[in-house]
Length: 64
Image (cartoon, rainbow, N blue to C red; front, side):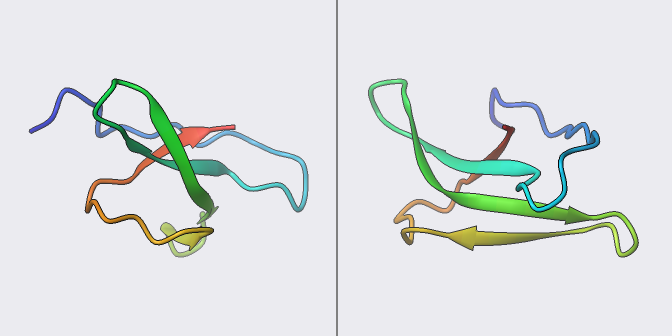
């Protein structure tokens, strides 16, 4: 288990805006944006669109 929380809070947003920003942790303690994500409450699933393909398997979703 990592030091990052596995709990996501879903809140309302403006129509058409992504629910989350997808980022990966860098070695220097900073974060790099790699895409964005939408949450579908009907199916309780996420759809993530990547601007770049991360070489790390860990992707964290941040509220925008």
